[in-house]
Length: 102
Image 1 (cartoon, one colour):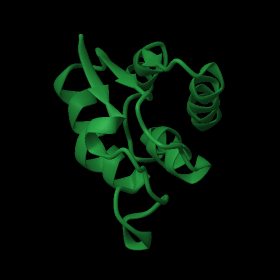
Image 2: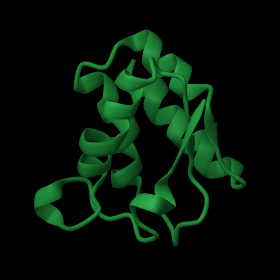
Image 3: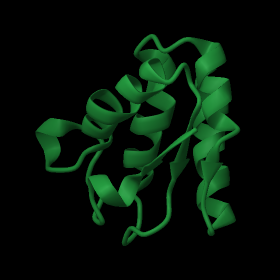
Image 4: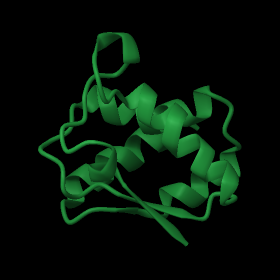
């Protein structure tokens, strides 16, 4: 299983949309996350550790936006089970955005 570290994208995740600034949730989702989900049939882990904080808009656009952008529900469910973080509250926030989008 491939692990994607958001810290490799940026240690300072940005806003929701690309037009609002660098390192947006939209950019991470479209340029990194969706291609990796499709390439690996959903068998990926996303590690949330190692960044200097998240805005809720970044997380919601990244993870809640998967369903809105046509990613297969079964692949999203696989991903949901493979979100990792040392901070349980961030992990649960991401899972809630995924659940709300399905």
